[in-house]
Image 1: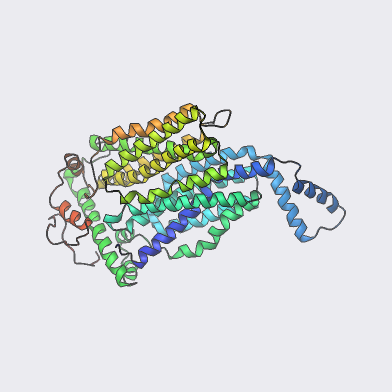
Image 2 (image 1 turned 45 degrees about the horizontal axis):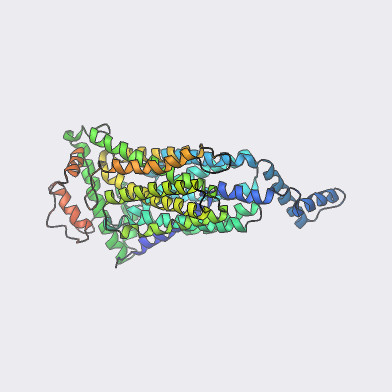
Length: 511
C-alpha cells in the first residue's frame, strides 16, 4: 500500500478541488449559450412582461428595494439577450488567453515559485467568474474570458508540476491521471448547475461563488520542494521536514532525487564536451517534431469533440454531463502495466478508430446517443494519450534543453486548441466531414510516428544528447543511471551502484 505523507495529501486534495473549479469556467461559453437559448427564445415570457409592466408603474411611484433588485436583474437579462451573438467569440478569446498563458506561465512560476503564482491565478479565476454576473456587457465579457484563459493555463501547468514534483518517481503517472479525473467531475457538476440556472446571472453566480468560498483553503498548499532546493530556501524546507516523520521521510527521498538531477544538469552545462547539445541537434529535433505533432493532433481531437458536444443530436446539458463522465476511466490508466510508448500508441489508435466509427455511423443516420458514445470514447482515449505523452515528452528531452522543448510542445497544443474555435459548424449545426476526418486521422498518424521514439518508462531522465542516443540503443549508461533506476524501483538502496559523477549525500541532508 502506498503511504502518503500529510503534505502530499494537502497538495493532492487541494489541487483536485482546484481542477474541479477550473472545469466550471472552461466550457462556460457552451453552457452560457444553452442557458440563453432557453431563456431568450421566449421574448414575451412572463418575467419580461412583468418587468416591463413594473417599470411603467415605477415611473409614478417609489420603487421598493426588493422589487428594484428584481427589475435590475430582469433588465440585465434582456440586455444579454440582445448581444448573445457575441458569445462564440468568447471561446476564441479564451483559447487565445490559454496560448498567452503558455508563453508566460513557465517563466513567472520559475521566478516567483509555483505556489504564489497558483494562488494569484486561482483568485483572479474566481473573480473572473463573478464579473460577468455584475457587468453584463459584451466587451467586458470577452476581456474577462481572455483573462480567464490565461489564468486557466497557468493553473493547469502549475498544478501538474506541483503534483508531479511532490510525487516519488515510481508513482509519477498517478497525478496526471487523477487531475483530469477531477476535471471530469467538475464538468459534470457544471452541467448540472447550468441546467438548474434560470438566467445568465444565476449561472455565473452558481459557478463562481463556490470558488470564492474555498479560496482560504488553498493558502496551505506547500511550495514545490524542487523549486525551494533550487532557490536554496532551506528554512522553508526545514519547516516542511519538521511537520511530521512521514513528511521528513518523503522530503528526504524527493530532495535526494531532485538534487541528483540538478547536479547532473549543472555538470552537463559546465562540461565543454556537452556544448554541442542544442535544440537543433537531429535527435532532439526529431523528438521535438514528433511530440509537437502528437500534441497538435491531441488538441484538435479532444477540444474538437468538447467544443462541439452539442452537435451530436443530444441535449447540451446531457452531452456535457456525459462528456465529463467519459473521462472517469482515465484514473485506471496507471494500473495498465505497459510502458510509455505502447500506452501512447494504444491510446492514439483507439481514439482515431473511435472518432472514425462515430463519423461512419453518423453518415448512416444511426441513433444520436450511439454517435455521441463513440465520439466520447475517442475523447477518453485522446485524453489518456495527452497526459501520458506529457510525461513521455519530459523523459525524452535532455535536461539542458528540456524546458525549452516542453514549452514548444505545449505551444503546439495551444495552437491546436485555438484552431478548433476557428472551424465553423455546418449549416445544420453538426461537425463538418473534414473536421471529423482530421479528428480521426490525426491520432492514427501519430501512432506511426511514436514507433520512431524509444521507450523511457523506468529509465532516468536524459541529461545530454549522448544519453538520448543511449535511449535509442536501449543500453543505459552504467553508473549514474543504475543508481537512479534502483531508487525509482523503490528499493531505497543508494550504496551499491552509485555513479562517480554523482557523489552520495547522507540521508536527509540538504545542500
